[in-house]
Image: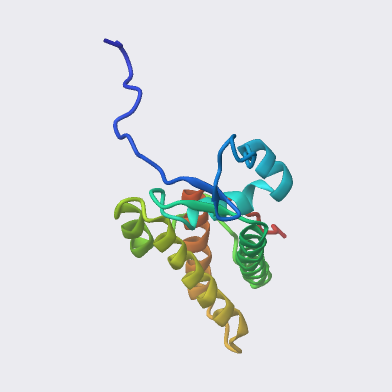
Length: 167
C-alpha cells in the first residue's frame, strides 16, 4: 500500500469528448489534444466550454460551440471591466482581498454534484444584474461593488481568469 498522501478521495467518471458530434477516437482520426485546442481557440473559451457541460455528460467540441463560448466570455469580461472602471471613477478602491457577502446559490450549484452548468447560470445572472446597474441613472455604488465582488469570486472559483482595469 502507498504510504503518505492519498492519490484521490473521489473518483469521477467523465462523459466522452465528441468532435463535431462524433466520439473522439484515434481510429476516426479526429483526436484533438488539450494543447491543440488551447492553442487554436484559447484557454478561457475551452475552459468555459468544459464548465458549461456537466462532467458526466459528453462534451461536444465544435467551432460553433467554441465561438459561442468566446462571445459569452466577452460578455462577462465587458461587464466586469465596465463595472470596475465605473466604481473606481466614483472613488471605490477595488480591494483584491475582500470577498462577496453572498454567493450561496452559486456554491449550492457546485455542491450539487459539481453542477458547473448551473453555477454558470448564476454567473450570467450576476452579469445581467451588472449590466442593468450600469444602465441606471442613479448608480448605486454599494450594490455595484457587491455585484463586482460576487462576479470576481465566482470567476476565481471557476478558474476563469478575467482581468479588469485598475485606474
